[in-house]
Amino acid sequence: MSVLKPIVAILATINTKSKEAHFIANVLKRAGATPWIVDLSMKPHNLPAADITGEQVAGLAGTSWLALDGYVRHEAAAVMVEGGTKLLVEKYMMGDLGGAIGIGRIDD
Image 1 (cartoon, rainbow, N blue to C red):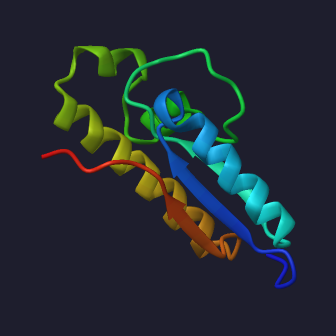
Image 2 (tube, helix red, strand yellow):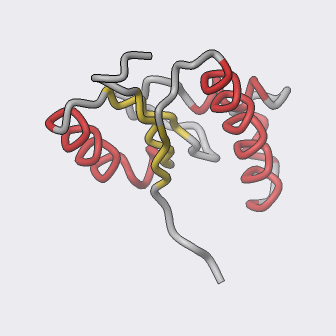
């Protein structure tokens, strides 16, 4: 990882927060960082522009994105958290991650 241009993960559900993720990515670029968008969407979609797709994240947790359609929300979220955690820890341990920003909402 370059100290001058750190990689910052942007964790977002791209199916609902695509515009926000790309706004943050642009701000990070202007600040001299390299944005790395990770899609944590719990349902398959056709929106492009994530560096790591929801399918890849689900696969890291041992399932497929399509299989998440049959899960209740909290189960699907747990799968994406597991896959996302594995991904971030691996990238951090390799020295390739300078930080992370999460975008989302809190449900009651």
